[in-house]
Length: 405
Image (tube, rainbow, N blue to C red; front, side):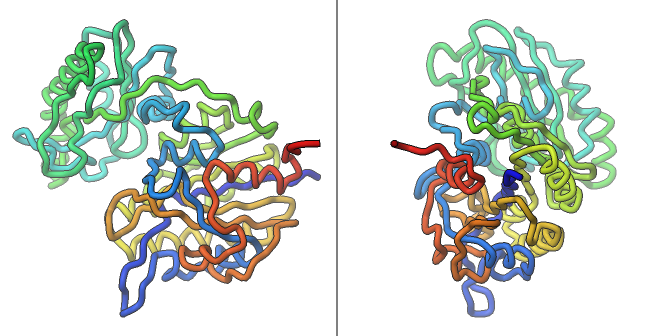
């Protein structure tokens, strides 16, 4: 029986040390990770530059690199990946944006995530039905506060600046063209944002949120403009039938773009409340019919962005409890890593390397006892690059391609 690959991405789980009780710790090193640590003891460990040293990866380019695709060659922006993930049928020449439902008042973005709103179906429907633009458009909600926008027409360009200020309590920006070809696009996008404010500000959903003391979602913030990239399908690239288990629009979009079969787990929101047990169950079922399964678990990243050490540690312990079923998994190579580092001391992505563990039959073991940023740095893998990981995994399942005679 040929070995399978279970590729686990703990989104944003890697961290930088902070001083706790006089000792430098990360959520990984402070958490009680009985099962993950056992997988690390059974395998080989190291650290990995997802893109290259010192480059903070976005989750989009991070996942592309980990899957062996060159983001410098195919990436134009996150928008198309979010749009595909949201279920929008994009076409060649479409211009796509990732979007947030956000809270706006007197020119200021008070909350870029509108209190991490989830009930956006009615708001998205109001945008679809009432916005009128000079070009055709498609708008669809995604997980949580996220959404996607596609503009369809002649003369559109992704060479514009974002309207999103990038943080709370900052002025809403205007889209600006980066060259003369993008003037029309900037004008259309600014018109879309202005219309979204008028349509959403007095929407019944927001009126109800006001009564409950919750942040309202009265503006759409598009960002990450890009055109749809053309990529080689995963099965053609590696000869593996692949699948993915995830809940975030971005990873769903990357999976669909690369031709991975996709499973959205019941009860999974993509955030801190994601149903990890269901994800593990789905991943194990998919291994019966697929050679490769990618499982993305998101919540640690949100805790990092919230700069909450305890929440991140607790979430890692929830992950570990669900991973009991993975210890000693037969005929399967397991890889556990992160797509980027999101330190609680920073609240954003950084260019630090992430820990990586590869475990399974035939893997050379090292002396690492616990999976964390400190100990994995001393592991037998050393320091590798994200783009090399798939080649290592292919070799371990007997699918590596010989170089030379």
